[in-house]
Figure (cartoon, rainbow, N blue to C red):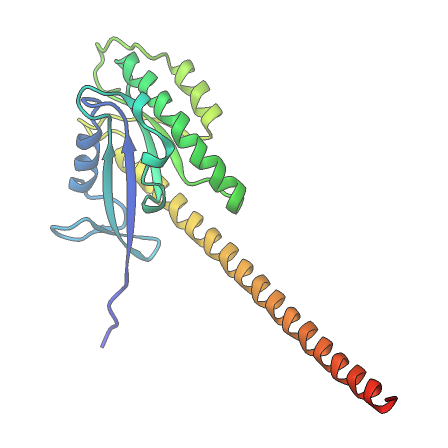
Amino acid sequence: MVKPKSVTHIKIAICGNPNTGKKTFGTTFHQREIMDKKEENSNRYTISNECLDIEFLYIQPSAGSSFEDVQPEDIPWYDIDAFILFYAVDEMNSFTQMQVFHRSFDVLQKEEKNTYGLLKPCICIGNKCDTAEIVREVPLATAMKFSDTANAPYFETSAKTGKNVSAVIEDLIKQILRYRKQKELLNTSKNKSNSNLQSDKKKTSFFRSRRDVEDDDLFNSNA
């Protein structure tokens, strides 16, 4: 009997203003035949011999608010495997708000770096690059400069036509799997180090106890 493959759940947050194409992006990904294999009627895929269940979480300001109101503690950091900073190339305000969100995101990213020496996978996407007659409000050079500063590789996609959608997510998933493996190794190494430290403490305590007993015997013999 062939043992069924275990399924690895991956959650990716797509963060950006409303009407930038975030949900269309996620839907386009799930509807297209991508990677090595897509299972029928599911969000499961096989890549690098791993069976993955891929979920998108869409983060955007609530009605009447903006990302100015988002604090680091509002971001579900520990539940998310990777973040996509998302905006529309024909809307400067969406780019500006994405940068505002990044300020809160960056606080958590720096904590991750300080704790593990790693950065959680994150990319920046400029969507709606499909229309030839589009009036581009965000210059490519401006987006690239932000991307470099944010340590978030930059891509342009069309959620409507599917341009670059599959390639971008496939690359991001590979980053996630590498990140998980590196973090697991770090945690294993840390646990081993802590175990050795506890063992050394027990040895020190044992020898101190033996010395105390011997000192007491010596004291009694001289009484």
